[in-house]
Image 1 (tube, rainbow, N blue to C red):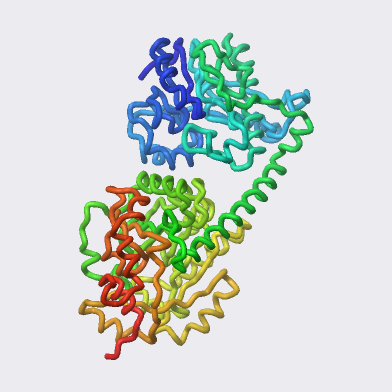
Image 2 (tube, rainbow, N blue to C red; image 1 turned 60 degrees about the vertical axis):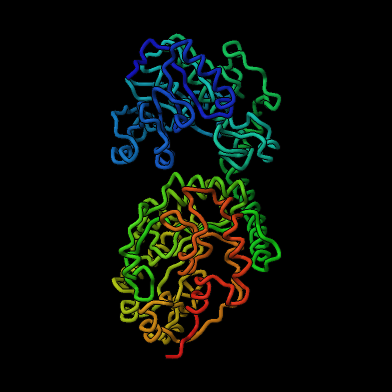
Length: 591
């Protein structure tokens, strides 16, 4: 472990200048023999001696990217269990608090809408330490790293990559010609530029307080050595970097503008902006979906992706292929989709106008214990519709909160019955009371949070056993959820010995599947990485490629799917066997 005491420390933030001037920064580290401290998952770009973390959500999402040779520094509220998910070495802790005093004398040390020209507010916004505890609102992990370095006895502190969210003009960010971070393009942190200004203003206040406290307590301030909007601390003579022609000079807001940048105003603006943006994107998405469904326009990339994140189901419904002997005994090298690979696909999709994802196949998605991470990544990346289809048996109150809080936009509950007797006859190993209680709890959690999403749908597959309960089912649920749907029965055992048995027991009517638009609209990613053209049980029999061998873009344009599109709605003699089985699975067979 490199010692920090009496050493030159280099704090490394995630601004766009980091990637741009990486070589100069590396030479500076070598020349000055600096001890490096990276912020969050910066070690995926640059190897650092120490890696400091603040937001637990960032750790949950990106902890797997940490360089194992770096020493991680965590806040005291991180649990050991959470840390050990990704990091097995010795680690360090830091303490910080935004509260001063106890009981009635307890004071928040920060007012985010304060104007520092006001003497009263200036006294209230403080930064100080007692022993190794940092007091005050740090705003960013970069500020925490600077303060921590002071306390550990650094002899000098330099900073790179703390550029500011408004380093580039709004127009260039909208066009995605530049970025707010060294990861991604465009608005990688906020979608409202006014909010970016507010964040930079808050950071500027923190840095000023920190600089003064450093000078007063340890006898020296810090310096930022890469271009930054925080020019008060910038030293251009160290790395001698030419001025970026797109750089936007920071302008200190007036007191009037501070009021405009209040949390309440920002929240309102963000809500309006996001609502309009979502509405525009959704209309665009549905237009493309309809055009693809009419075969008038094939999108350049699938509009929708299904991810079967993990193999298996906790129930044993007779009419589901999950209950087949061959599926349960099937042994493949991969039993789930890796989070890293999932993130790569989402990132590729965002660049190519992917609008929608569903996080299940013929499995039970809640078997994936950290499914909220997958939902959150898609939501933060900008995926418009994020849905899943579940039997609700594993849907605890805590998991309900995780799904709602992380950006799920639609959830479908498979129920198929309105009484305990019928439910447990159809859904083997299911418990009616548990299922019902979990769904009601989910609806209550959603109501308590005062949110409109996710939309909730309950599903009823009509068959011989349950068809008499459909009307009562509809009456029970119609004033509780957004949609109540009846789904035609499909027999997944076409071509097997079990087909006749399932037909006799469950089949009640036929459904004609004339036109299939699936290979024009979506792709289905199986748990082992194989890609199918649709969400049908029989889609598994058609492999278009594998995510571990090729990109979604290339698979969407390969010769296999082109051949499928050319015959899927053609004469029966030209259709794939799986397509024939699929159409037959909806039809009533005379026995």
